[in-house]
Image 1 (cartoon, rainbow, N blue to C red):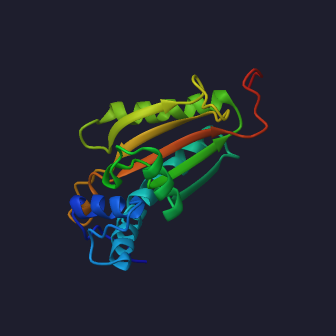
Image 2 (cartoon, helix red, strand yellow):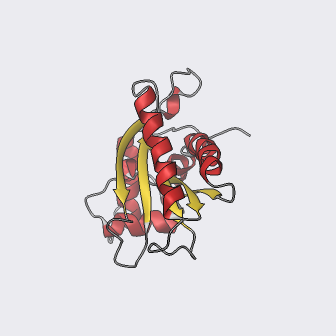
Image 3 (cartoon, rainbow, N blue to C red):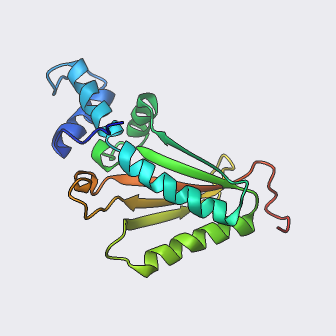
Length: 187
């Protein structure tokens, strides 16, 4: 399977995002189809880095919880549009969760063990690995809707000439607790 590569400039990507949420029918791009082509290329360009992050997550998650569930997804167009509308200052080229993967583990102890594996990975060779951008701990500070999990944001980084084209693309890794997990319970 051939992975998509970015074909447009960040400026074109941001214009396409602006066009997607424009209330008026302002056309900064040749056509609606062209706008969708730009957005879909940008979105699908995250598939290769996402696959790379997901495979690492799968190994690490199974290391701490043999029953861990690991999944990946590219953000769908309606979700991209909603997020751009919700965060007016956000630019499409800066969106950190176009590609995302998640590990669902059985309890808080295993989730913390998984986080520790990522912290150790970052400290081993920080200049050669993917660039850690930041994290969001929704366990310490749950979202208003009750969501609890930890999100890690990375920028893809590869020295391989074949994969350098993806350098800088952001991927979000999520650690979540199984629905039946009680945060007050031991385990």
